[in-house]
Image 1 (tube, rainbow, N blue to C red):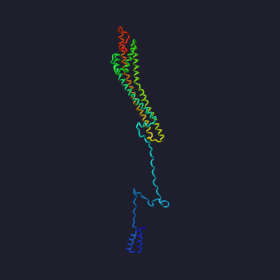
Image 2: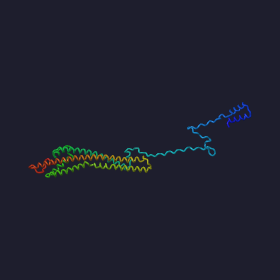
Image 3: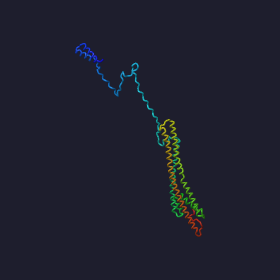
Length: 332
C-alpha cells in the first residue's frame, strides 16, 4: 500500500473522529517526510535495450530449474570450418625444355626423333640447294655456249674452257663425239638414234643424282605428324592413369602430362611442314634442271645432224668415201 493510500485512509478516519484541520495538515506532512527517499508515487517505465547493450532478463524472466535456481545458458555451437581445397601444384617450369625434361621416356624418345628428323630436313635443304643452284647455273651457261657454236666440235671446245668443262652438258657433248667415232662407216640414222638413246640415259641419270635425298624429305613430311601423334596419345594415356591413381578430377593434376603430349604433336608438325615445302620446291627445281638438260640434248642432236649432213655431202665429192667422218668430228 502506498503512502498516498495510507494518508487518504487516515484523513477519512480523522474526519470521522473530528480532528481539527491544522492537525490533519501536520499529520500529512509527517507521513510525507517519513516516506523513503527513493520511493516515487509514479513508476517510470524502463528504457528499452539498445542494439549495443542487449537486454538481460530479470529474476522473473530468467529460466529456473526445479528448485528455483537459474539454469546456465548453453554457448552457441561453433560453425564447422570449411574443408580445405586440395590443389595439385603445377611444375614451376612450363617452358618447352622443362616439359621435355619432365616427360615420359617414350615421349622423350619421340621428341628426340622428331628433332633429329627436322635437323636432317634442314641439312638436306642446305646441301641440295647449293648443289642444285650450281648445277643449274652451269648447265644454263653450257647450253648457251652450245647454242652459239656452229658445230659440235666448236661447242666442245667452247664448253671445255672455264668452269663449264665439268658438268652434265659437257658429258652430253662427249657422249655424242664418242658415239660418232665408234659409228664410222655406219648410217646417219643409226648414229643419231644411238646418240639420242645415250643422251636420254645420261639425262635420267643426272636427274636421279640430283633428286637423291629428296625422298627422305617426302618420308619425313608424311610420317612426322603420325609419330608426333603417337607421342601425344602416349602422354594423354599417362595423364589418365595419373587421374585414376590420384583419385581426383582436378585439371591441375593432368595439365602437365597433356602439355607434354601436345608438345610432341607440335614438334611433329614443325618437322613435317618444312619437309613437305622443301620437297615441293626441290621437285620443281629438279624439273627445271632436267628441262635445261633436255634443251642441251636437243642442241647436241642438232649439231650432230648438221655435222653428219656436212660429212655426207663432203663424201659425195670425188675421192671421198661415203659416210666418212670429217676431222672436225674425230675424238681427241
